Length: 151
Image (cartoon, rainbow, N blue to C red; front, top):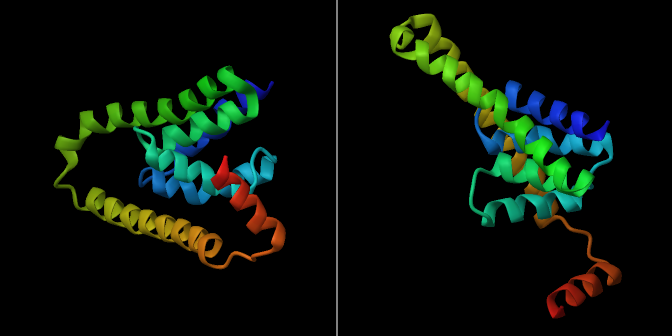
């Protein structure tokens, strides 16, 4: 069932991605193309829309993709999937954080995770820069953009 698949995919992203919405973007494009849910050009539009709408980019992206794939219920399940793991992880970590904040091993793990988050964000920047600056202009693409601007 598509709703459970949406929930599963976004819950996995929410559970295993550290670094916020921009870190998720790098992984999300590959996953969405793998499932055939969205194309790369639609994905760049999704990120742009997620930027201008209020709320976290990961939740906005999940909501948009869920709606695109399976309507309102798809939107609900994708959003729930991205939200639930982060919520529970935050609740669990917050209980232990003050007890272990001075622990040397904990600080080493957090520093390593920061480096990974920076790498994921850099990957997203490279992906979108490639689409933004190295666009192959054809007569069709120019006419499509003009038509979009006029409507």
